[in-house]
Amino acid sequence: LGPIDDGDLAIEFGRARVSLAPLRFGGGVKHKVVAAMARGLPVVSTPVGCEGLRPEAGREAPGIRAESAADFAAAVVALDGDDELWRRVAAAGRHFCRAHYGEAAYDAALRRVLEAAARTGRPDTRTLDG
Image (cartoon, rainbow, N blue to C red):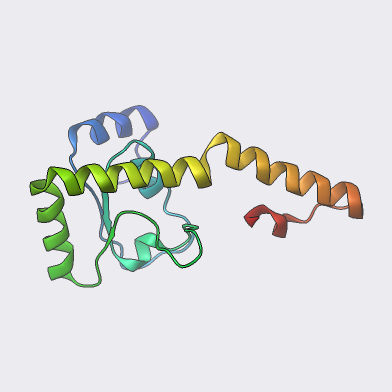
C-alpha cells in the first residue's frame, strides 16, 4: 500500500498475471492502470478505474470493466484461466497505450498545442485531445 517507485512497480507487474484496480472513488487517469496495460498486463477494473482513459469513439478502453464484485471476481478468474482471452486483452491494452500514451501520441498533442499557439499567440490545451 502507498507509493511505489517505477523499479519496484516493474518487479510487481512481472510477478502478476492480472492487474486489479477495484477503485470506488477518484478522478482523472489512473496511471497504474495505464502502466499495467502498457506492459501487457491485463487489467480488471471498476468503472472508476477506467475514468480518464481516452478510448476511441464508441469503444471502451481495453481491459475488463466490472460493475459488481461478482463481475470483478468472474473477470479475474476468466483472465487467469483462459490464455486466449488473456492474450487478446493484453494485446489490446498495449495497442491502446501506444495509440494514446506513446511517444507519437505525445508528439502529436504537443504539435497541436504549438500550432495553436502560433496561430493565436497563446497555447490552447484543449487541442491536446485531438
